[in-house]
Image (cartoon, rainbow, N blue to C red; front, side, top):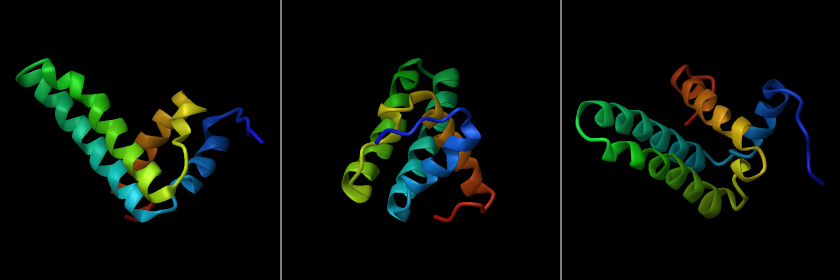
Length: 100
């Protein structure tokens, strides 16, 4: 049964439930950190780094889902909410609200 969400606030608990395995959350964190790094490298050195941003972000996250969570990434059903969820979870990890 497919869920529908009216707001990101409704979606985020679902998003976190799809990331229960700490290894998956760690891979998301590393991937998002590399996206940030690639962005700044793209600005300072070569636009080639911009092309690597989705590779880092999705690559690390999808490995976490397929290998550890054994589920389909939420991005396939909820692409915009999922992208927002990645960033919110990243900053929640930095603030200590989500454990890695």
